Image 1 (tube, one colour):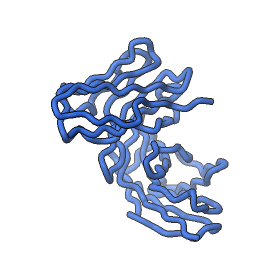
Image 2: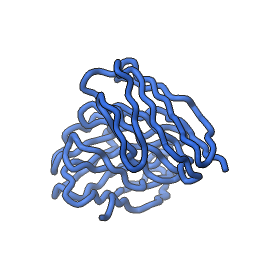
Image 3: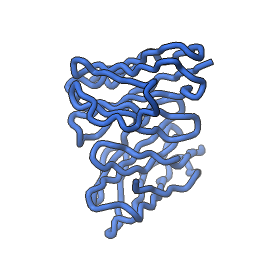
Image 4: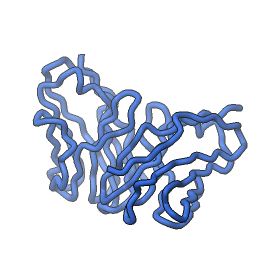
Length: 108
Length: 113
């Protein structure tokens, strides 16, 4: 299965934009990039997904490079409640393949 | 609207016992998925239902694990002869159709003593 690579952890300041990188150099043409987050003791929460184009919704923006080998999730104004593990994953057909994710800590 | 619900939220059992974990998907969602998450790791796929049938059960670890979805809505994950290594959070997700975004429930935390 294709794999993603994310930093193990990162800190960001409350009120600032948080930029979460993800490398997926082995992604194939029909695989979507999905981002989920998991706040402690809860189920994963869907954030956003994309195939080729940049996407934006009420939670975040997703920037995908033209060659599709990497992407960045942007939380425009991080709050303390955004502290969570963020997963960048592929979806091929119906399976989601989670890695270890990035532990993001938002600090006041 | 209501999201995916799972019961019980926590289950403690003894080695060798049988357990059932229930998932209520979002109303109208035809696809249902089970995942398992061990401590410190990301969720791992177990099984996927499209309607009443298991379309892919390749992630089930062995034949002690079985899941059903008899009416195409609620699903039950069944574990026979539980082992301590089965301790994990069992997550259920549903999507409107097989290609759709998966929405997760809160999970059932299973502890096998």
